[in-house]
Image (tube, rainbow, N blue to C red; front, side):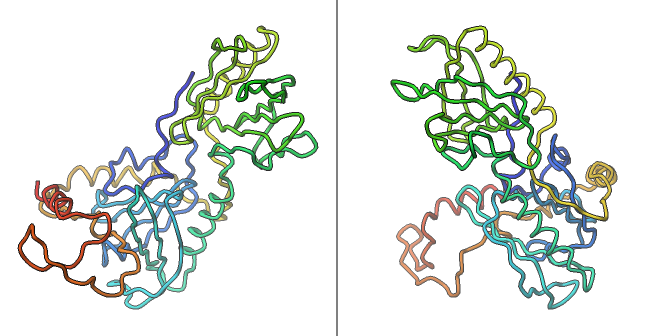
Length: 346
């Protein structure tokens, strides 16, 4: 069964990524591109390019393309507009993005260097909203509002390829009789006696689909990704020949989906931007030529968001240092801070 390269683009915040990681993965679509955007938080005064895809936001410096960042939409906690102090535009309206990734909060501030253009705000906010409202394409869902009058509620880009009756869900000792809907983006099962007892598993979250022996006889066993909870779901279909057909059909559709995923983020842009690969050809060459190890910045520290800190925390005595220091934020240790310094100096 085909397997996905782990999808990280929409679920991670990364700094100074390689040219390979800046390329779009299968199913990732370039939606908009703004050529004059300042990263006011971490690279104030540096003109850069902002690339908006259906999975993430990418910013890179125009003069030093290896200085870049990638922000996945799934990490975004809040998007607002506020006044910021830009070295290139002075006091101006900017886009503030607060994110959370691996229990760490990062704040990003982007300023459009084209006066009077609201495009930065409208594009990012609209695409993020489209991402938030299309999670059924990407996330496993239990007991959702999936069925209406015994029929699957289709997603906008979804097509039903097959409907299989007489499918037993083996999650309980007696089993539950229900129906499979096999589509181009997911597998859905619901109980015939209770439509709200259901599960929707996107191909994106399928790890394996196999035939295995169980106490109910041969069964279709579906393992989901760790990202989706690592579920193991069992279904029985009679006769065995029918079971084999269904497993082959699901495996085949999973391979097709792997080659060209449908992430479900729909957004129309009248001015279609140039392809991302065309944009990156020149910058990759520049990236190879420019090497200056002494100018590496601590990106983690530059974008770190210390909550809504308004004033310094009270001083406390540190036995380790033998002096008074500002009380550390919950979850932080002195040894951990020294490790960050060691990494920076190495």
